[in-house]
Image (cartoon, rainbow, N blue to C red; front, side):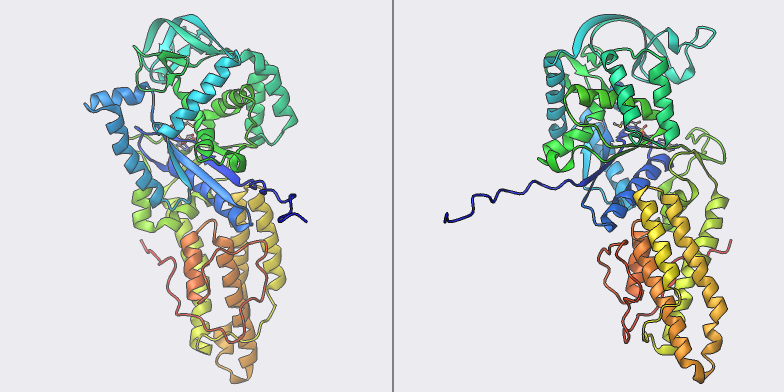
Length: 514
Ligand code: MSP
């Protein structure tokens, strides 16, 4: 017999659930849209963890390009110094939102740049690039070359392109066109690759009706220095989107975790950057012989009071201000409850205050508060024997929620939870424990009702973990139970034991009478 069995090999690292957000422009103003994207991604990440998966969540910053170079010049700072200062603010923003990200990428990180150059070299070696001279128009605002198709009917260019320059420039091009049919076939064969389905149809419509132009992937250094130099021609830097998209791969690779992370499970993005993620990115990966992400999940855009948010008109929602005033979980609740992932949404301060009052303060907050207060008042906080009057409804709600979380139907999941909250509030009214408590002969019945209420609150705390992590923890603390992560799918009824003593309740969402 050999000393140790030769058949024992190192087990392959198991695949983690890998989810990303778009990376924000470092020189932009952090607003509701950025907060929304990070929060829905956070809810999905935490939900998967609560369903037993190992999760890796990446977010970060897009720091190269002409706009950043210009803004740094206007601030009379070196671009790197300028970016470092703004990056600290963005990281603080992520912390304020209570995001559970596992890494924070900055495209100026050396670890990222190395991988971008690796991918560029690989595509160059694979003959995916060629050099050509471009004569035409350029929009610095969009950092894009324009052609006649981008013109308005009257021949002018739309104001979204800003000032247009005429250019004559030699650059490197990526042969996107040759992958067009492959991409159509891929998207048709993998219907979940782009969600929701109307976004998939939009991509397919575009791919089937327009010839895919080759993509310019370089900018000459004399025009733009703030970028990653091409490894095969140092007179150029990389096009900022080529650089930015690669972040999803560069971080797993730089961390030595490519095997356990790649391919990404979900890239969460806004509708405006669909083409980059559902056309350019898959072609880049395919040309480099890499697997494609499993899904690009596209959310809509927020407006305020039915108007575009804009600093100049003062029509903006500042997430930090809302969180200061109302609390983080109230903010997280509103944005996920108000808007499903897909359509556009509209923020109103009145709508926020109404949901806060009706659903958080009166719905969840009042239920937990009155349930635990009665338990304290009538039974000195001590739980009696398990009782299952609400068990079947609770388990049905749990199963529905689990299905919705697996399908990333976050808004629907909240509605399921609030359906059970409404049922519990109705149960309090029906059973009237405050009346039974006055009759010593009904002590047993009182114990049963209070058991159902306390156990229902415990399950609510388990279900709320992905959405409202602080509130979930606070309910567990008030119930005097451990706050470790609990598996939602395995959360059974009647786990509160007879004789267990709870703590004093505290208001979760204090009422704000205006
Ligand atoms: N840097 C690029 C993304 C590169 S990803 C490889 C970018 N940055 S951004 O700061 O302009 O936008 C970041 C994300 O925020 C995008 O997904 C965008 O759709 C989202 N939002 C920006 N404004 C928004 C709203 N008003 N509403 C919802 N999301 C919006 O694009």
